[in-house]
Image (cartoon, rainbow, N blue to C red; front, top):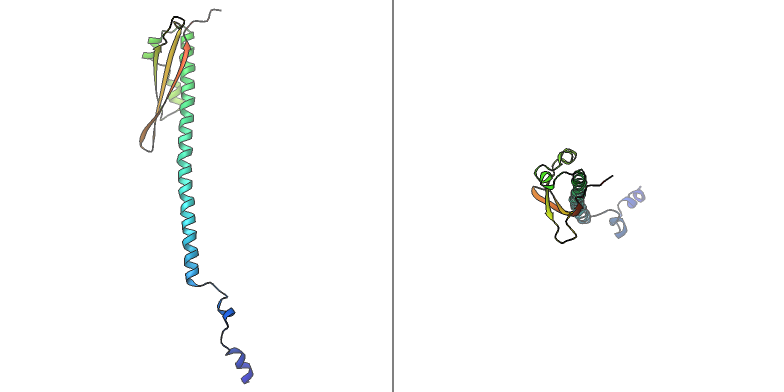
Length: 148
């Protein structure tokens, strides 16, 4: 019977003590994991903000294109630029893109050959994170009426 207890009472060897993780190793591993997860969360937040900025700028470009087309269409129908400046055709734009404001301005293009040309400036405003943002787009349009 003493032989059976002798096997149980033997002291642990060096290899038997290294079978698990120590508390210090677990704490270090959790610290590294926490740093990695917090970095990933910060990257997601930055990527979300960049995505929103890209969407806003894309919407601004689409709004400007639609405004240029509406202005050019009105000019082709013979509407006076002063009349367009007073009452720009922006109702459809504001309905399609809520949260964006649009300003349209007209400038004469200088030069002897540019009497039928107008410089149209479209400014698109929006809010991003509580701050006013905006883009300015310019295009030269011809105000001549097409004769058919």
